[in-house]
Length: 87
Image 1 (spheres, rainbow, N blue to C red):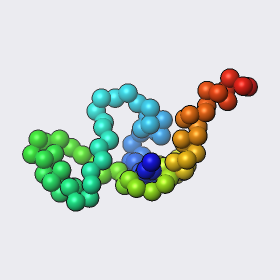
Image 2: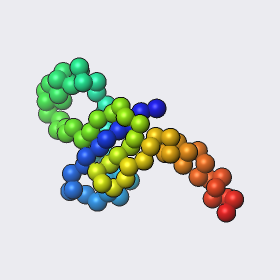
Image 3: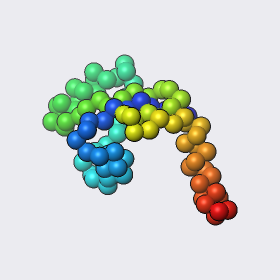
Image 4: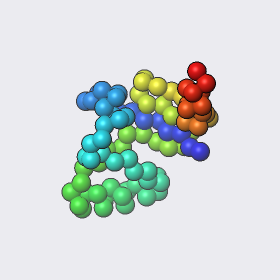
């Protein structure tokens, strides 16, 4: 499991960045050795893109909004319903 360090522009609220159902944004992970070729393909097709972070640590950090370990996120994801039902 890999985490990510993400720095998003302040143009939208944290909630909009994380939960918006807009079809205008996609997250694509590109290996550093393929970044130049990726940017050339994107440019050739006149698609705008912006690097917002890196992948590879054991945390998920997004601006100053949150900073959680991958293990904690995994625990929350798999146990939240059980904990809510217990009460």
